[in-house]
Length: 345
Image (cartoon, rainbow, N blue to C red; front, side, top):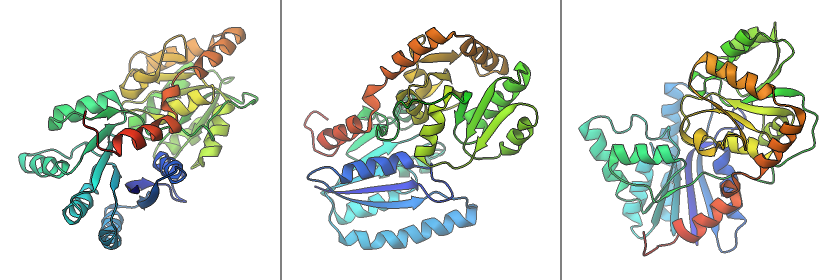
C-alpha cells in the first residue's frame, strides 16, 4: 500500500514540539510492513501573515509533482487549508482513498457564511474516512457540518519516549504547552501568586506571549522555564515533576496530558474537551472544577496535600490508564480500518 501523509503542522528547529504527534505517527507507519509512506509537510515556524501566505503558495508548487505519483491512500492531518490540494489530487486520481484527521484548530471559523460552508462541505465529499481526536470535537464537527466522524481516536503516544523513569522530583507542578490564554496559563500564573507559597516548585515548558509574565514570576517564586524542548526533553521534565497541571480553556484531546500519564505523572486538568475524557478522578489525578483562579488554587492545594504513600499509589494507578492511546494501538487501527475500505462504514 502506498500512503501519502499530508500535514501543515510538522516540527521545525523553531518549534520542535509543533505537530510532533504527526511525525511520530508517520515514522511508526514507515516502519510497518507492507506500507510505503511519503510525507508532504509544512513545518511550523514563527511567521506573520505574509510569511504564511508565501509558505502556502510555495507548498502548492511543491505539491504539483505529487500529482504524477499514484497513492492508494492519502491521510490528511488538519482539514484547512490543505484539503484543497487533496481535492485536486482526487480529481486526477479518483480511486485514491482519502482519510482526514481533525485536530480542532483546523475547523474553527472555516464554515462561517453560506458560501464558505458550502465550499468546504463540497471539499469534504472527497473524504472516505474521518477521524476526530476527541469526542467534543467530533460532536462540534457534526453540529457544524452535519457529518459524523467515523472514529474518535487520538493521534497516539510514543511509548519509546514517554514511559516511567526513576527521577528525583525537582518540581511539584509542570505545565507543558503554548504560553497562550487558550491554554489557561494566565489562570495558573495568577493562582501561583494567590497561593503565595515560595516553597512550591513550578516548571513551564513551551513558548508564547506569556513568557514575560513567567520571567516576572521567577523573581519571587521557584519557577523554571524551558523553551522549545524536543520530545525527549519534555519526557525528562515530566518525569522530574510530581503533577502535570493544565487549566486549558479549550482542548479537543490534549496529547500532552496522556504523555504525562504514560510517564506515571498524575494530571491536574480543567473540565473541558479531551481533558475530562482522560481524567479519572481519584485514579490518575485531580479536576479543576471551573475555569477560575480560585478553582486552580484549590486544585493545586488539594494535589499538594496528598501524602507520600497516597501519591505512590496514585502514580501506579495513573500508569494503568489511557493504554488505548498508545501510538501502536492508533496506527494498527488506521492500517486495519481507516486505510482500507470497510463495508460497515
